[in-house]
Amino acid sequence: MFAKNLEDVHRPGVIAVDKEDKVVLIVEVTGYPFDSNREKTREYGILQLIDYLQESKTSIPFGMFVDLEKILVFRWDGSKLSEVILSLNTVDVLSYYEPKFRDKQIFNAYLTGLIEAWIGDLCYRWKLEIPPALNEMAEIGLSQLLEGGLTQP
Image (cartoon, rainbow, N blue to C red):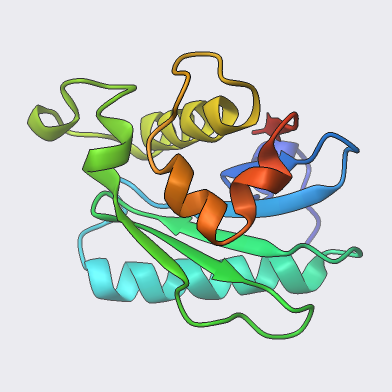
């Protein structure tokens, strides 16, 4: 079966490219209503992330999985996903972009938009001079790759 529309194709939530337009990060996002069994959903989401990285024709150094509780960052060596190299609390990061994050139901599309806003802030500082988790992202080498780049939904 062939997809008739781009909407029919499951794609990563966010793709980030560096200032030379090379993909440096692929993000899989899972929010409400897809989070009923968080462990299974997280496991499936990470497998989906691996599929995206394997299908890529270029080397992409990082993958990220995001759900309503955690932001998990992994290294990709071209064939294998590392163990989690950085784990952040989603609410701690995204409450800068949605102050009521703790108090409202966050649907998948909105969660994706918030992640894109945060990664965009890491790329070109549109909102905060020091975006959340900037130091942690620098320690693993990701913020340096994002600097001056862009996000693509």
